[in-house]
Structures are given as C-alpha cells and as structure tokens.
Image (tube, rainbow, N blue to C red):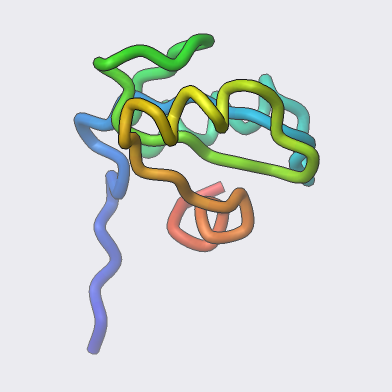
Length: 81
C-alpha cells in the first residue's frame, strides 16, 4: 500500500508562473495547505517554480538560478485539494 505524504511541499518555497487550471490565489492556498510557503518573485531562496501555460520571465530566472521546475498538473497530482 502506498502512503501519501500529508504535506508533500513541507519546507518548500514555491513561486507560480503561467496560466493554471485554478486562479493563482487558489493555487497558492493549495500549496500552503500542503506545507509550502509562497513567494511572488523568484529568488535564491525559492525552491520550486510551478509552471502553467504561457510562463513569463520567472521561468528564465528559475533556469538561471537552477531552481526546480514542476508543471502545474504534476503539482496538483501531488496535493490534497
């Protein structure tokens, strides 16, 4: 039997970019419910960028800083909504 981590994003500092299935506010609330802290900007402290369709300049900055990037669908698969 596989057990799901109740807080899959504990200790993660997440930033969102692009268009997602839910509004940005809803995505941020889902992330916080699952243990993450939210940042509006990509910095060296950011640990994960969640990317939707048509990402903006945050994607370039995340690549430059070698920050982990996850598609929004994968993010939603890992969380309790």
